[in-house]
Length: 99
Image 1 (cartoon, helix red, strand yellow):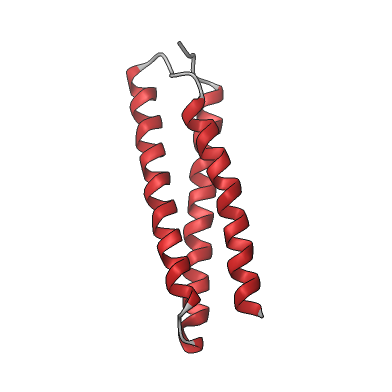
Image 2 (cartoon, helix red, strand yellow):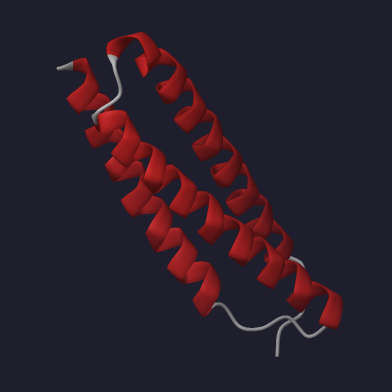
């Protein structure tokens, strides 16, 4: 049951993350070229991290119990990095003029 609870929790977090990612993409474009490039770089990084986490979720479903802990720690770390990067992107956009 622990495995299913973890997978459900991560799925819920990913759905919430997807909503934030969509809001980030829908924000007005920053005026400066540097800010636009940074946002695009962050957006693509977040998409790639999300895809990696989804792939690990699939692997985790069938992972043997001896590697379960390693998988969950790895996925939590990836998610925490994604969430931190998202928070940073949202905070940076608040201070940047937009078009």
